[in-house]
Length: 319
Image (cartoon, rainbow, N blue to C red):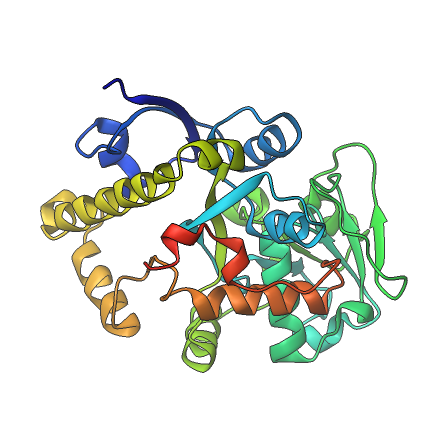
């Protein structure tokens, strides 16, 4: 029997290399793997349906499902996770040293809907008492799905594809949050500084308090494919898990890591989490997804209440 031909798009991840290299396979599927960066990939999938499956923005997925847009269905494999603390930057010399200093200020985001923005707004609100209504959110990209926000939330769009770090040093925003470190910070020119200088301490404390390592992206599949071939969801999930397992086994030997003490870092992370830091599956991530739903509701992004169960295919909820 011929294999089902499917195209999947995701970013470059070390632990998905075994799947790319053909070391592991998706049973019954002839998988065409594309490397497409996040912003482009999310837009192409949601607006043009370019792929059969892809890594997709979790926040856009929540907004869409809240609007009863269900032609995309998720499986509980999450290629990217990040805390927001390390991505919060202020202008050097601004006097802003803590989240409370941003009340009444302006914070730059790529978009209000962006998943790192969702996670960071939620963190600032629930851990540091900075409500979403306390700030004007300045965005530089159009929303992908487009939440219908209440009037209490102030969002300002700046035309011209402006870079957030430029707006920050020009004084047009008081802080910025985006899922890439500012080039000025990487160059070390001294013009920007972290809102949380000891971000690792803050992120570890957040995890110890909440047991949440925030999800950025799930894998989604077109519903029309799953209606015809529901087994595709479990086949893809198992292949992604097999790739993660193969990579973890590869990482056991320190000479394979391009860090002097990479093995020590790995052991430290495993000890801290007590499990694989990139934990997958429905049951392990129930609390994490529930937390994102709560954040999205607090931030006015959901047109209706959502349950964790309805977001994932029925045959992967057993994982």
